[in-house]
Length: 424
Image (cartoon, rainbow, N blue to C red; front, side, top):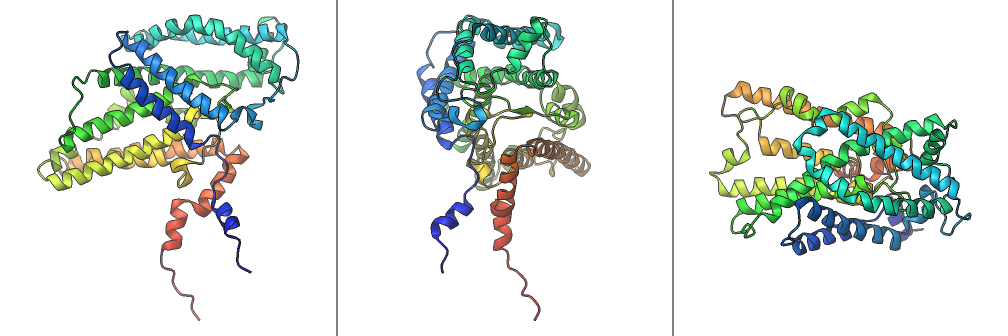
């Protein structure tokens, strides 16, 4: 009896993703529309950035709630209908816990000298601008979610209990603290990158012509990296149970934190650039391939394709992108084929952009540069290892790992390779 084609297709299908492709597509379309519509809006850059982020966030929230119905996922911990009447006492405890959390994060921004740098001013301005809306909306949101939570005594309620002199669940508070440290570290960075990239895009007046490959490549790279950081900003801001994008767990090991934070300012700027400077001569692919138009265009197109896949990976997360956390397992987009498409494509693109194997300073510098870039790649390999170890605590990720082992890109390539005939 022949196998049922439907069953074969089902066996080849990846495990269910925490969100679908239409969430990211809606966010991307909303971003393009907002960027065009707000180009001439006479407001400070941080206000215009907030407006674009709000439009993108709204588009993805609507798709997640109305198309994918993510609030009904078991992982959200919510019921479709209220489970209990309004509890003013617990709502106040949660509200106190939320504002204590925000207060601690704000105090750290005030305390740590790095956040006194003018680099962070746009984020501070945006935070104060959003503060009145957060004050007004937070009680409504907390009360709405509390009535639907299957287990309403969450970390915010435990913090409220601590404020009232009670004895909270310390393990819950520790997990809550790790999650907010991650959010507090990455949200300012992502917002500022987004604000700067949007300002640069809007400053193109008139827009850069696409009359040659150099202009096309420059615009393509700038736009793709804008998409990456903008989606990251939205995701770090909206860690909400209502959209099932809450932090389920945070990286539990010091090693995982070290290899991740090493890749971001101020750690990369003060340590990574000094010790892993793989582009010492400042000569990149344009310098070496510029005199050869055909090869120049082909090489640049491959770089753009790699960065496109890297950004596609970010967009596939929708509202769930985040370093060092599990906010739902994504199995669509490029994750349908490999477990770490962003790290893989980013690492390859660096070799193609910097071309460390060629150097204007001689072969010794070339060898040194290759070894240093390999060191950067090793950092990202370690990030992949620690992330998988963390995510493997989730049965959904273990199922995804098994799927990739059977049907991922490498497994498919191996099946296509000629096999030696067995000896008689």
